[in-house]
Length: 382
Image (cartoon, helix red, strand yellow):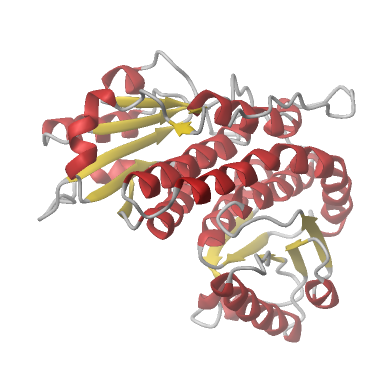
């Protein structure tokens, strides 16, 4: 199976910010990431020779990362656990060194970093190596400290990312984590070659599906931002794997618009956050659904109930839903429709409208989205 090399065409227009251009580059970046790590139906061919022994015996995967990379790890945790059965813990890279996370297990530590030079993440990897643990690094930049010191390295196809907010680096990290879930599932006998091939085929169809929707999402994000850019706080909600995307969507808005935004599990609304819901709090809900997956359908039904609760308290609702979903459209004020996809692939698609929404809110406020105040692209000191 050979991946198709997509060459995205963002309407042949000049983008006023690097962030917007990089959002439009995501179809190509995702396709290139798959192409780098899939050869003739073999996932990660030759990538893990140096840690082959650990891959045969390890009992747990520990992911250490910060910021958007940690949110990618949170999505990867559910992908890997659900598909392969491997237990996964996600740590803040800055906290890993101070915790005894290896008690009674034989782990592998995976570190994720956009720059490959993130100080906290390098420290976490070095601590793992000191503890005698094999490491895998996911980075968007080759020939960096984290890559050189790792037992094995997986480089994304994002290419240079100039804007401080992570966009294409995030979706390509999630793509690699999805490939890791399939790799481990196949290796551990949890998935046949035929099933693996079908999952890979669906992954390779995503870039084209995203490319066809980018312009529509962009225009809707500009429209919706006009109604909400003056809000001082936002709440983002998601269930299961979508909780990671709620966290990432909130971080994007927080980073560049300077509004307070918090990502929360949708089922936790009544356990505190409901006190905040009123007409002044936009609530952004991930309400996508894989209707062929009973668990996804159950989560979706419960998310609809949460949305109704928000509406009963006059909370403005901005949602991301699957194409053709009339139930969400009947409840929400604003809807971004995304192409149908398997449950564990939906995060790659649904985060992109949230990136565009954050972008337009910040631009409408007059802020420099590429260089947010107090932030740098690579956090190289603790």
